[in-house]
Image (cartoon, rainbow, N blue to C red; front, side):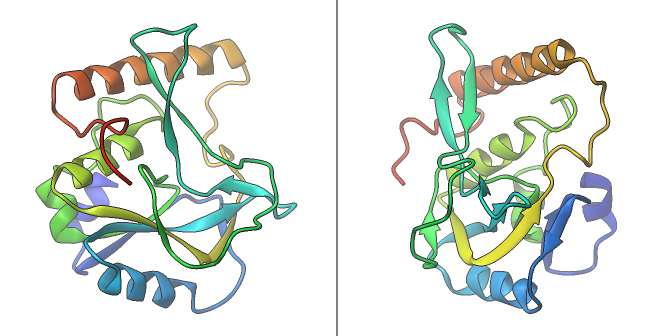
Length: 191
């Protein structure tokens, strides 16, 4: 993403995983309108659904796990459940970069995605918290619904233990950046 942004000519960027599939046309213009019209919008994201139309991503939230002190993990509220809420945009503490729209100027101002995270965990949360530290808000735009096949754009290894170790390392690194004040604290900020 950072390399692509370095050569991008557009003022608005869309970060999009290869395993995200639109359900309808005009979704891109709806997100763009939301980014330009919602108050203090730093980034906007669609409602991401699994193939069975249950929630894959409807914003993220921080999670302290008592089994992993000094780690801050992310949860996807409502994951696997049907979407029963309004399609009105709502602010969230975190969004996923599986599909995320942002202004190029803001992307560059916060330094883009932190490349110190390993294989697609927490760099989007980190990015969102940098935007929030600048006083910008993160908006879910559920009117836009896309399917996300989740993790099929990654082909790490089939060993779940290996994947868990990477997630734990990234969660620890993420927590350290919050403790050091490099990014906003999602547990202390209002949404």
